[in-house]
Image (tube, rainbow, N blue to C red):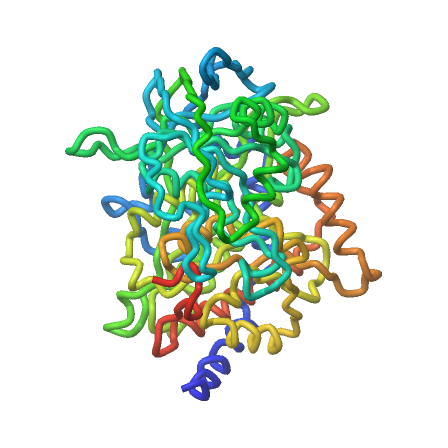
Length: 534
Ligand SMILES: [Zn+2]
């Protein structure tokens, strides 16, 4: 079966070598336009975001890619709600005769998932360690204890490990992500879940937690349920380590003691004998936004019902708090570069004289910066069924700093595509570099993850880390500079001197990989035993 691919590849290469080939200059121009001040940082629910989505739709149409959205348009409507907990939010913990009140932002942050302007709750606190049930590693923090209606108190992260056969060693698994903790709390019918923050368990300081939860957060609108209120936590939040100590002291416990207990396989939930009460008033508004989506149909009468998805989010942070007098968060690298690639891939794919067997879907999700909301919505309302979705190949923030020597493919090794991914890298003269910070859980932080979470194989084709003709360590240096000075800042702006060769290479890599997958006899899958295997 593998041999057959050779024919396809030979057919693919002349395309890349001709006039119709993927061009750095076209990607550059899309990037330049989408990051102009005129587009006001492509904010969700802002005018610049609307113009950006019209631009993407227009370019898809000019490329010859067909509309794949609602009612014959290039748009998939995404109904979100923006929720901002107001500073008069209250959280307290009490035992007989004693109580502690926590202060908003100083001690706690969080939000009600119920999408109502006033949420009150009250429940017994129960400490559940890391809150993980992972049968593949024979780990269960709950041990069958019923936590319905209770307020879970827990730590983020997972049991410490250097053994690849236990929670993937040093790498963070999805069980260690705070998003998993709240999902598990919902599944178990808890009233709320409070994470005690520590810098080592979170991987970042309290300021990061406070800044991300102390403002409006978009959520996918809860579907009205015939049985009444949908399952949702009255409170998902965090407290500081100091506030956590005060809370646990009411039960005669300490943070260190419970951290140590939660590292043990025989850990059992600890009822704390504390009553937690809260009131979470919130400002709520509808955020009507949209994904942009186009398709190039496949050539095989049967396989064209199946799709290879390419994705790159269009949104950035819009107009926000000024930094050095600049309030426009242009998001040139994050993610005008990815949008430029997406448009160029659609153009090159639509220009192929002989189309691959499966169809190619080009998806630009909204509200990635607000927590992967556009792709979450897509995965819940897919235009093609998950079982007919071959893979999602995602682009988010590519580096235009010369000719790449490598490509980062976090998560490709989890899928059956891995040998092919390696083979193509070799052919295109690219090394595959592994994620330098596996403990940061990058795999869970961009749109491909929404596909993975719903069981579809998916990964991102990431930025280069080594550039040709540059001294060793150059890639690391420019990455650190970008990350500390420009990432999510108004200064993420287009520079005329940028060299888009590496971005073109990442696009070519995805083009060839996507085409091979579109022509394979079998759909890709997860490796057996993977957490996202369905
Ligand atoms: Zn991004």
